[in-house]
Image (cartoon, rainbow, N blue to C red):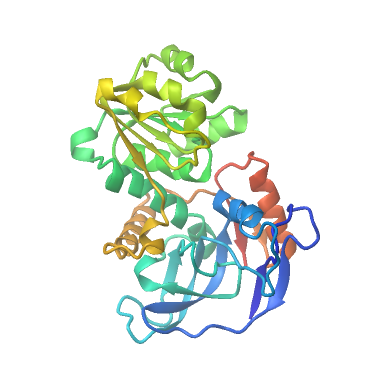
Length: 337
């Protein structure tokens, strides 16, 4: 089968930053299923791992990355129970395993969901990693509830990004929150409004921008960009007994002591925790993805796919990574195989 990977970490503009090669098609065993991939999407984690995982070393066999895919089950392992050959599926995979930038991929069935029926594989491939991240942050970490929290306010940092785009929809359409999202360019502002944000403000002066729309404080804050950059503003803007959640990678310590006076809780979210550490509730990602598929089919949320490249090629992966590294992408970029 065809696969695309890299033997060493190189800038995306370098000739061998991605290499096309042939490798043996895997065989499904145990709880793994073999998926014939029809489309993938790219996420910041992709280029971060390309940039850093093979620094100062050269592998003999190219490393294949990619964490978002939609396709059809080709084969199931002997211990599987959730899927059969021919099922349409979507998933984000496991960061410790070979990724989706190839024609076929082995993936543990416990982190795979049935693909939504109302959209094609391209639109479905845009959703797994980001919707798992937003869902886990809101429901598993912060334990938000439509019954208890409807009408409360949430500030979403990075509203036009992949996670921010689906987080806006879940916060608005599923939880019934009043959503304030950050964006700074005209097209990203309009994108956030299209996702359902009630207000869109510039991230550069959060406290002043919030006051300008009538909010001195909010019940919840979800950071999808940089917790260090906005920390002082978060401390000021969060309500007493509020909650802050983040997926970012801080370069400096986060001073949680500043939250003590308000009894504010802070939550980390990493979508790969369950698969990476083989947690007892790993199969919950199967159920989350099925829920997301149902929301998509019922029209409660929509795919955040915003641009498409066609073909499993090194050229397309280089272009996808280049665009993501620019920090200007809106929604999700999908590669259709």
